[in-house]
Structure formats: structure tokens, C-alpha cells
Length: 86
Image (tube, rainbow, N blue to C red; front, side, top):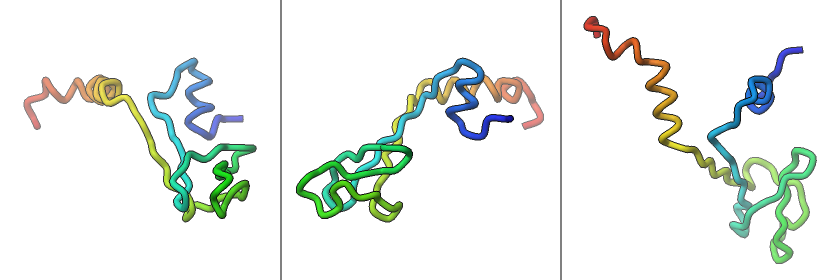
């Protein structure tokens, strides 16, 4: 069976992702937890406490290593830099 997620593909090639995601509850703006693939608010004072959050109830913050991303893009496109056609 072929891998279908970025995580499983990276694991197959013994690589690590340069990105990470965090999810925040839109109601209380606190960090959520992931349990069995479901996002839950863990703030006891929030109306959505311990409830499975839908996409409209969360904000995703993605952090990535810009330097590593630029190196990757440059490595993939290095042949274009020496080409006079462009």
C-alpha cells in the first residue's frame, strides 16, 4: 500500500518535516489538543471545553523553517539559474 499523507511519505524516506501545525480554539484563543485525530479545546472556562471542534471553530498556525524551504526550492530549480532561455 502506498503512503497517502506527508507524514507517512517522510517516514518512508527517513526524513523529518520542516513544518509544524498548532490548532487554537476560536472562542477562547487557547491551544487545542489532538486526541485520536480530533481537535479538542482544553480550556475549562471555554464553552467548547472537551468538545470536538469543527473547522469553523479552530485556527491553524503553521510554523516552518524558511531557510530550509528556500534551500529546497533552490536545489530543485538550480538548473534554471544557468539557463539563458529565461
